[in-house]
Length: 207
DNA sequence: CGGAAGATCCACT
DNA sequence: GTGGATCTTCCGA
Image (cartoon, rainbow, N blue to C red; front, side, top):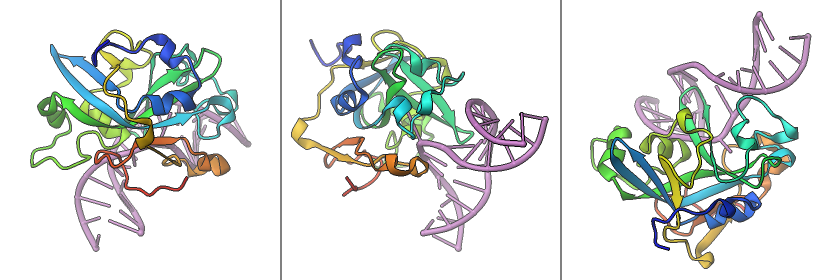
């Protein structure tokens, strides 16, 4: 059971609010063009399905976009926003839940040069520039809609055991960019490794 | 069928 | 701190 062993499907078949902190420290492994790029996950957010106004599954919506979200846990849910950005989630629970965990940030472990190239970084690389945000992370790993619905236990995008964050070093806060969700925006569903420089915004956060 | 908004990022003031 | 980029998706009429 080493760092590069994929997490089993059972890992994801739990409530999103349990899976989200448990994903901190895991490795996101992207195989592409015969190479490998690896990020250690340092920030996540849980989306709780039909009861969660911030979720794409709010109110039980089932649309073309959310098809992958309504599958059994352990697959990627990738979507496109703002006309230019992709977001990567791990689907959780079972196919009736519509729950997922957004992967918001990661720290480079392997394949830095290729990730920097995909991010169009030419100068000195500063903290957070490779994958300090959900859209940056997708760009660094070349994640797009072609990976929507793909299983995370095998294939070109996997999540492995990695080096889990110590539970005592996990901080909690409110989710980013979901003000439209009114009181649900206040739910403490954002998780990060305390003090990690790659996290997408500084804290203290509200919680 | 049209309009509005978006789980963001970057450049600029 | 503010606004523009850019286009898919969704909802209401």
